[in-house]
Length: 60
Image (tube, rainbow, N blue to C red; front, side, top):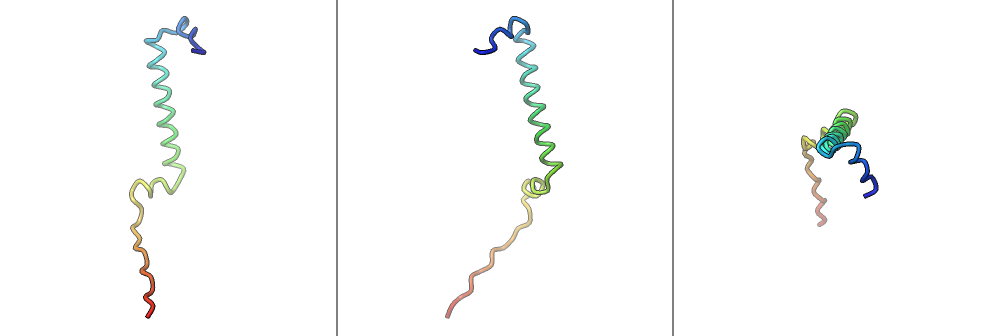
């Protein structure tokens, strides 16, 4: 492990929950930024408007 000596400074009982919390908060922040700064995400999550495909013209 590259950073194995970090556990000599930080207890794993503190470091692991802190790391997982940082990942969860970062992920939440990215998702909030996507939802608030884009228009297509809200439409995508709500299903958008249903459009009916046009039927092809029948040749005789």
